[in-house]
Amino acid sequence: MRKEVKDPAAWVENVIKNFINSPENTLRNRENERAWAEPLVGFSSGDDPLFDTYKEHVGPFHFTPSELFGLTFPHADFKAGELTVISWVLPQMEKTKADDRRETRYPSESWVRARIFGEEVNVKLRHHVVAVLKEAGIEAVSPMLSPLWSRKDSERFVFASNWSERHAAHAGGLGTFGLCDGLITPRGKAMRLGSAIARIKIPATPRPYRSHREYCLFFSRGICRECIKRCPADALSERGHDKLKCKSYVDMTRKYVPEHFGFEGYGCGFCQTGVPCESKIPGEL
Image 1: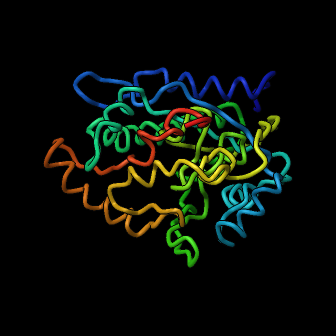
Image 2: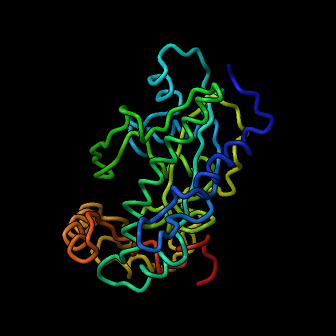
């Protein structure tokens, strides 16, 4: 039986925030520090035309919410407008950002812990959101947990996937893209993202921007370029993000991390820290 929810937006937001305020949210270090600060949550409609444009901008393989939901629940009789895409932002903790900000060649231990163990928290959160919705009688799927999710080769973007957490968050009013391809949110670019598609009607979060690059100082005003200076892999330029150079650097850290921190992992984060958009939507330099 479907649970009657008076304010579904507040209910879903509380589900996410309560999980992040639980002991599950940990870097798994000696101090048992939190992995993530207070989340941001946004919503977009399953029939938002923006999702159709992603087939052009990301690739024809990119799912719309209704496509992925329909494949997950093949016997469901639904309309796209009955679906809501729930997106969340998990901001990095201040200490994690400060630790990585001081580095210039290799990522800090706390940043790598957030990338590995913090993302494990995010995976558990995805499962939790879907489970709570299911318990309430609401069909839901988290795209990143779905066997339908896959990486895709892209002639234009080199690496892509058939569901993008960043593009879902952008549709949900949570941010715009920067020069390094990261999403600049009201809590900045140093964060991780998650999403779920649910058969529940929640009013869409307004998008307070007109352009998908509006918050980036380079694209909006032709200034900044700080992420270019921060990149240890020379993977950023005014032309954008060289994903092959980026991947090569990150792969190299897979050797550095166990040798210096004592656990398997990888990371970087330099384009997300020590830059004007690290923790906020940037204004003046």
